Length: 122
Image (tube, rainbow, N blue to C red; front, side, top):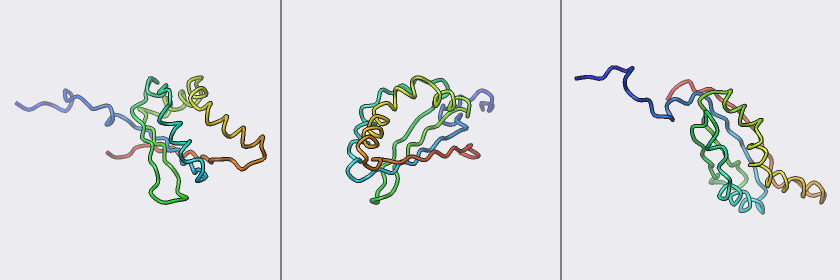
């Protein structure tokens, strides 16, 4: 007996239709701190409605960017996260590092650039 497509459960990752990628370039002396921030994160994003999964990708070549790839069911879910108190709290330590560098007259230890994508195929 075959199962119709309507009754086959869709895995959560297949339902995602929106991806946000944060390209983060760290100064060499900040890479360890950056990875430590993610290793000890509060995981608030994991509880956000519409969140599917996230990967933190370390570059294999010096000077290249880390990629923080978050998968969402839709753009609205991502935007709700990006404007939430949980987002601000989750980024507080990194923002403090940037503020300390600025106050000391030092270059920022990292730079960040967001690009968002709609998934067109799995």
